[in-house]
View 1 (cartoon, helix red, strand yellow):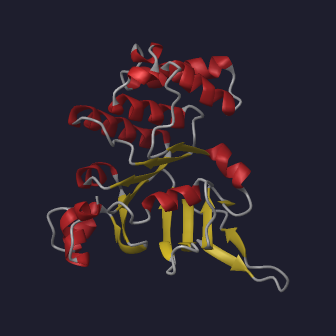
View 2 (cartoon, one colour; view 1 turned 180 degrees about the vertical axis):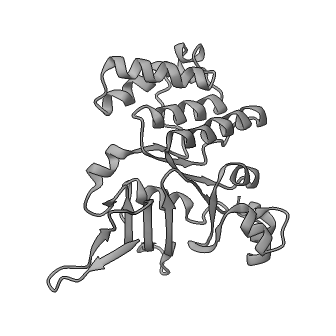
View 3 (cartoon, helix red, strand yellow; view 1 turned 135 degrees about the horizontal axis):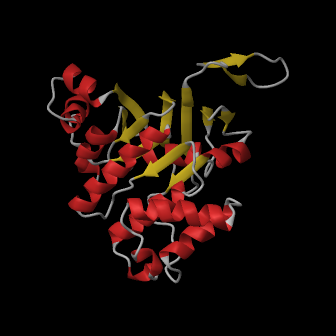
Length: 272
């Protein structure tokens, strides 16, 4: 649970209970973009609060532009929040980014790979950034590549990879440092249905390693198949939170798309 301790000279300090079961805690989070060219402020994230339990797969579901990627970017330290509090692995994103980055893995929406390198060379490059030994990188990389069936392809230049293979490589790069907390931003975009379902099985298996995962997606089936709980986001606001089953029961819906339609009057795919 998030708590604050008042200090007459400083802003409230965030304190995490020592027996806390949460990996991530977000309270009243806001990200507002302003521009001289645009008179009106853009509220990408508008006062969102949620917690993610340790070992949970937590989904951020909503159309493009809903604020999902902005939340991921704040939690992983790529951008700063305008207001509110975000705590990742017990560390405040505003003051303890170095410690957070040692705990996390990030699979961004756009594939981060050097196309003139082979798959394994890309993995080695990012492993070196984490100050891993060559032995650690090789052992970890071989295991991950074999799990996703990319071992042979890893010897080829990335410029010849399909979109699905690039996404899989991106996922493996995010896991090379054995993170405790993993951020997956639209991890299966560009994959064909067969590879997507195989990747779902791989992501689901990470729960056995007690890895906490935040997954952003606009694929209804993906959220329903993988997530223990989902936060449905629209126009930067949290409009529903709970397990897929609970949300469907509460709104008497056959899937999460229908839940979204009943709450907002439009479909998630309308924003894509």
